[in-house]
Length: 157
Image (cartoon, rainbow, N blue to C red):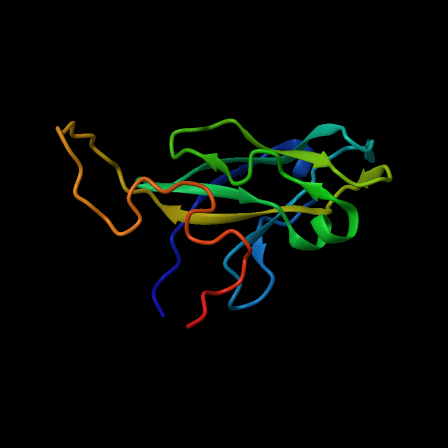
């Protein structure tokens, strides 16, 4: 097993008693981000809220931190991240915060220490654009949305 990639972190005063993000299981891809709210935060149906984590980080060069929703919150309460996955760039040094949207029918209360989102560390590949006169042909061609099958079933025969 290779050594873990290190993310430098500063814990802000409003997160002093909360654990740092961690993996729930040995095979987990995402680390849980905890809500560092000072009081319960009620998110009404259809409303958005910005949830602080109380963490500032420095990512290693060539990496991003992807902030993703938690499937249990989405299924049970309709809590989604409207900009998912959110990207934390390697040069961002502000507090990590999570935008949540309540798509459910009931108000949702964010409690202190709640696992509000998950973060996945990912390598970043830099791209360069090269303008050309024509593109190579492909089997799909210019087919857009639904062009490979619209009913969701696997092709037969």
